[in-house]
Image 1 (cartoon, one colour):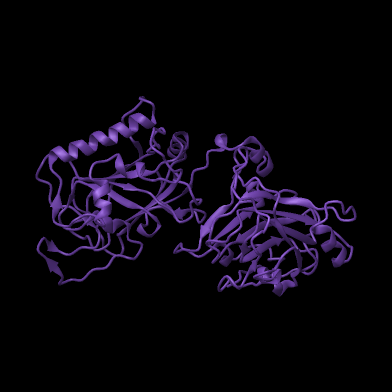
Image 2 (cartoon, rainbow, N blue to C red):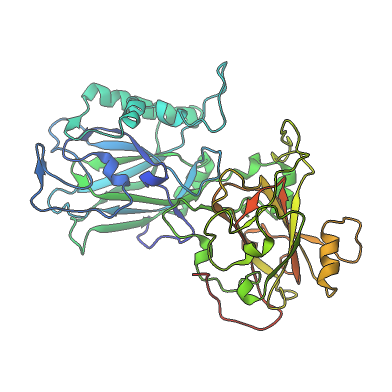
Length: 479
């Protein structure tokens, strides 16, 4: 464990706005544990008191008089998780803030982690995105969530605490197949400083050994925060990434999207409901070749019932659904949608396409495309099920290139894959990076791209970045 700043590629996993929840706390006499997950900075009103004592913005337990120590369990959450899944996470770093707890901070903490497994299917119908199992394993969690959190001025009996400890041991045994009843220790017992401005912040980077333990478990879903023995902490911030099980993905999908098991198999997904800015707002070393300010042009499409391809190239974020490219619903869509058992995508030949001419002369030979962002901002009930992007390097006229886009027999233009077909989610930026193995033919010259959406729907923006073959410009974001 080392102290350092966090990795900028991680996301906040302990925010109540992203689905993180406190499931159990031994004591919440002075302040409820739910405050730990508040994304807003902690506050302090010097002369504000209540029946229990001084009002504190954090989790504060009473002075310990019984045997043991205080602890709580929290479920992690993320706005960046892939839609329709109950994900697990790999933790990268921790931030612990003792703000305003100057004589009542907990003197030491430790943190443990565990993955709660989905139970085997039984005779009851169970939906893939049913998250009940993440709460039901520990006593009192469901009723706590239903009432909106913990109750200040309360504490659990020793018998109830013992039941909760047994539940923690039970899930550990289930996850480890009986090998261990212990959770993974991600932060050993560590002293904390008082919450003065110069001493309040405590930051920790996970050792690689700890991250390997987490990966071997298949990621983690819950943390156990231990106070030794009592006291208060204002905020706990847990930073990490969604765990991806490479071995469970179809081999055809794996071959299509990565070069080896260490590469990411899915895009980085940033939901616009997140409190953090989207990836497209950050400066990037190469220019956005597709942007209209660099000469990108939406040339043609198969359907433009609700919007035109040129909208995809605006440097600003989309203002609404009308500020994008949206096609009509396919009249020939099947009466019942089916999924391909291998890819998990819709089993359909139906698609719409748009051709975009890159600006700045396109991507340079041997340098190529380094980053692609597909944005479904505002498209929440009408985003495409999936997208595929091809490229070409053509000196022929734009008219010939566009004619070839919807004609597989057209031999004068060679279209080659940049992104193999991949699922999309609603209202989110999907970031594909060549360094992570999800962009094919990334070093080839590209003058035009063909965006294919399955089977129909709407996109807000398509952003393509790379080394320009024309003039050089300074890197910038769209903000």
